[in-house]
Length: 314
Length: 264
Image (cartoon, rainbow over all chains, first blue to last red; front, side):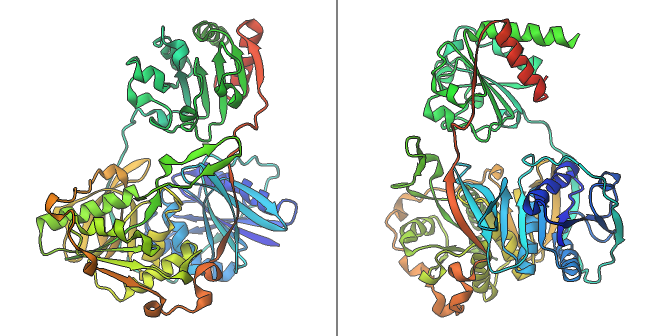
């Protein structure tokens, strides 16, 4: 029976739960048990999803105190001898994972985006060089595998309901914290095309009516971006430029309107999940990346699609 | 006050080109640059030194000796000492081994705090700062956007951190590892005209395994706990596209796609 430990980041429930899908892909059909470790919270969202829920209730351990969290995980690993340790690559997770790996002398792979199996070995896939290449990494010289997992990549869909046995753990290795939170405030929402999940992007083909794109972006609750030709001609601001000389974006949906798709533009699209492209030339390079190519005029397309969206909303 | 700054030279990723015919990344003739966040970290150290001339700054880099001209350029900007950790045995070390090598050198050093960038543009694992802090048993924070210089005392410092969802102010016990983010906007000063040709060679010390004394199987690929099995380029043309016209049928197809994916 394989045992897998998942660190549950209380600031990111969903991405912590989704790590169950990673465990699933590692062990596939062989038997395994999942353990969640939670500090000072015991949330109902875990019930039914994990086999075990290890909670540590101790006000002395703050959620940013990675040294003491590492101490606890070390103690637990000595008891349970985990076969895999997974940590979401959140702000905290990215500081915690390297510490734990060093303490336990386990190889660590950062920001994993896929799991593959190669010659009986689990291969952890991660991007490098700003996502320009991918590396398949295996663990070496140690039994346990460990990784931090990039958020929003894996999706867990529960199939069976687990019993979720509760384990209350009292650590014995706490030390005085070397760090103290003085104050914290929510960040202001900064309007940046890199943070938008949906981008409605225009190129030379919409030079006559670029403002029209904002109507569609509004309907989809997304933002407008532009290719270099629109920026160079002074129609769009550089802050919304996609491409090598602009910004690299990873939206879930990219609607390319009248964009040709030069190499430098495509370089600015990283891990874009869905691309719809509208172009009078269905053989424009950008169309080869698209899920759907609409052959035709982009402005006309905007009007028709908005009409359709509004009609279906009522 | 003594500040140690860990730096790394990386290939200039923005100038990589992609060969779509062969599906490979063209890495030849790409020049090395100082990792941008490491530059922010060093810039902060130099800023402290400018205010307090007593400050001593040492940069440490684990790299081939071919990086010496780049290191000299940093020394001419006001860095007091550079340590280049370089040995054939260390080639192929993963982050676990690299951290152990650098930390072994650091153990013998005295310092008030260690500065690093939060992450590097090439590997982007952000492992080294946390792992070194773990070995030295000191605290560490990533994505620091501001160090409150006035708060800097012998045994503590206050920093402002971008924690993705929040901006938080922390007090850290010194010594600690402060990993600076690019949002800090600390900028490296230029080399002063009179220093352009300054001979700084005597400020560089090269440390090899003769000093650090690792066993051969503790470092390089032998000592590593992870191994790169293969690298591959992202596949751009894997999608099976659907081509539709700009008519009712086409709009229906687009709408259904958006609906299925949850965008409308």
